[in-house]
Length: 159
Image 1 (tube, one colour):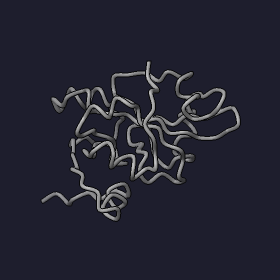
Image 2 (cartoon, rainbow, N blue to C red; image 1 turned 135 degrees about the horizontal axis):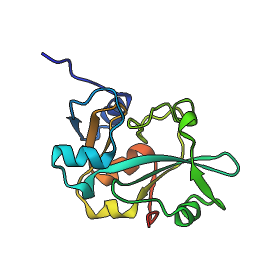
Image 3 (cartoon, helix red, strand yellow; image 1 turned 135 degrees about the vertical axis):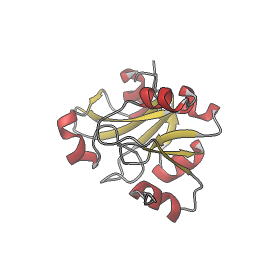
Image 4 (cartoon, rainbow, N blue to C red; image 1 turned 90 degrees about the vertical axis):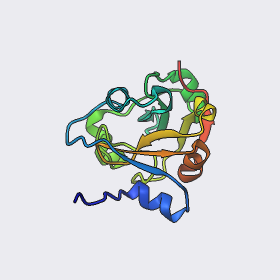
């Protein structure tokens, strides 16, 4: 019998008494995009969200969580974060900065409490799916619970 995985993100949600569903995609190792996961699992692509780490010119890190098939509107995102401009955090800096590798990044349980912005489209859904902090594992939870767990906010940040 396979041992049940418990990630730091799940532990935080448990401690906050937030309901979630753990989804095991039975994938190992290699990066798989959120869009690929939605296709492989026949999940509604509109509820699958990806977590992207960005950085300002002043080296402030901001975490943006957007629909899997969407792209960041960097002007809107910078405005939402209260900075002049944002760019993607370099992949080589991802793990040492936020504590997660590409494909496993979650806004819940990062190394530091970085500001989190969830795209406002999440309000249209009862449930969203985000990474659980380990490749091949996801979490389904209410968008408002995600905001509570990350101390985040909703903003229009996509193109």
